[in-house]
Image (cartoon, rainbow, N blue to C red):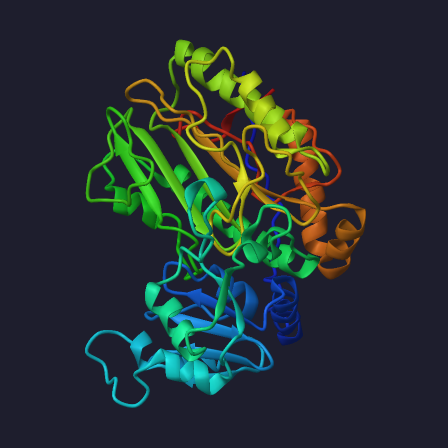
Length: 446
């Protein structure tokens, strides 16, 4: 049912301290050990920067970049990266490879990536693990070589090693849903992610409260008061009298009364999404047929989460809850977040991958269809933390810990959702959903 529930005001007010250089150095060492290779080569570019950022706090701005871990650690960047890389991460040798620069820039000094790799130390017979931005499952490939890196990088590695390199895809060491490094976060990283998740939720709440008929979509998005946080995905906002395209960027289209509307903002640490109708109320039949089973499934999802439950069981609980609804989830009903919006997910049909302490998980139950003139989505982020990790978070950021406890109480008392002790809500108010944006404090309660 719907009830008046004002947005709670408990917020973390102080940004967390930057992660230490020692932590980044330890991550690089851990990746090298997990890969079990002579060298590990990590690829990144503007659209695929999460692994490099997690390992070094360096994110390519215009060019590609390559991290090389072995007997010594080195960063290979293009012309523009030379000055930028010095700001970030562990102490690394910086090497220029102008092939990584943009077209038309000078390429006369260090044009060949293979020569740079040789100068770092790659040589004949080396075993080289390569980290791309994702990896193929066995059913998708014939050869187990790295798939999601440029072919020129693999060719350069082979040439640097005299054609005798043993190249392995070790991307799973970073992104596998259970043993991947980015699937298992410590207290310092979760505190940093909590800040990003809160700021994304604040931005979305401002858009929902500020959107009005007669505004352009651009004007509605401007209500978020963007302050330069690194985005984990494109900012989304759209309205339509028929069906919104949820992934679309805002346009000059003017919002209309009773538009179907959706918006999403993702920063490092979490994406928040809300989709509804630009009106004070929605039809009772729509509320009963679409919103009610959706929000009952949100409750089931949140209350199922705990350390040790398999992702397959979470998926089955969602599908059972939606069994009588006129739609199914369009994607996995929940996934891991990180520096990027979607890292991987243990929540898959039949998956035995367990929910583990240290995971950052987004509730991502997206209906496959709703009637024309409606939109329905409510996405927020949680962290999973066992007792030792909860104690570490509380010790590192007492204010955040108090805010998390207040959010847990709000979910129980105001929304009707009871969380396991290890589930830490990182949004302003997880699962707080107003189907009519013009009454943003009239929300679904269980």
